[in-house]
Amino acid sequence: MYKLPAALALRKVNDDDQAFLDALYASRREDLRHMPMDAAFIAQMIKMQQHVQMEGIRLNYPEALHLMIEDDGQPVGRVIIDTGSNDVRLVDIAIIPAAHRQGIARAMLQALQAHAANHGKSVSLAVEQTNFAARGLYLQTGFVALSTDELFEQMQWRAHASTGSEVLADVVSATTLASNMKKQGQLDVSA
Image (cartoon, rainbow, N blue to C red; front, side, top):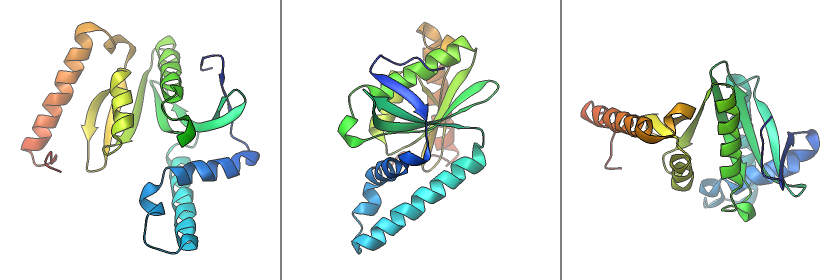
């Protein structure tokens, strides 16, 4: 399936993982946790947003794999992957804050890229434009921007585009796309 470094492993999400998944999702919602509201209300709001996210994923990616990422047998994250005919879609990846910056997300990306390359596929994803750490990681691992909207940037990695002049051509294409979007009023770079 996806080859990870020895300490890391993937397994399917099961019902026993729900408490971990709830805590993982809550850890990603700084915006909601800092609202000036009652703690119970905030917890309810986070739970509701988590439910909406998962329903959206199930609706848009019904065949997606929901996998736990484990480090030395302990859960450290979750990844959702949808494999299409020509593309591997990284629907979502989340790592617990205590395991950030330990190379886990990078290892997962590299495993997806190796799998995609072996099957003649690309890897695509969407990243929030304000998630600078994730965007930086994706750029470092060879992803290029294809399009943007007010919230998200669509990115793609292709095996043949990860070396030399092909990457430059893709970056130039993304730059040209951004320039054209700015001229058409579809991209506001002042925000």
